[in-house]
Length: 84
Image 1: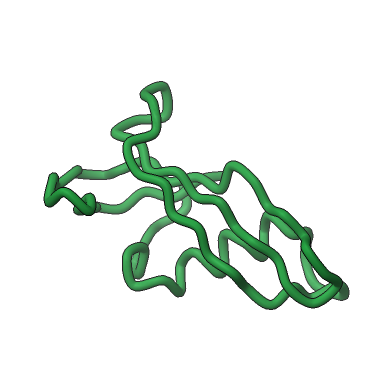
Image 2 (image 1 turned 180 degrees about the vertical axis):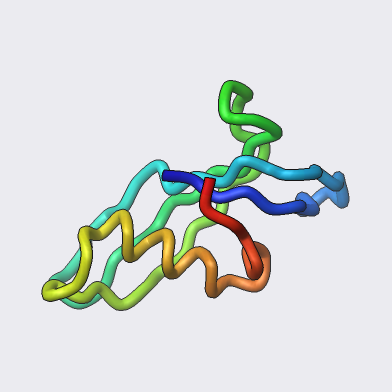
């Protein structure tokens, strides 16, 4: 699973259809987790930006990666991202 969206890096570089993927989910507690998200120009290119976010983990919900992707879509940087 991954996302795609036009993205502007923290250095102001604009990327059309950036490849966005959650590369790690750290479940620190039973109620919270950390999503580590990479932004790449394309799937086979290296990471150009790293975003880390914290979200409420639902033990009764989907797997933690699915929850991390749903969380990523709520971040302003990834609002409107599409599954790819």
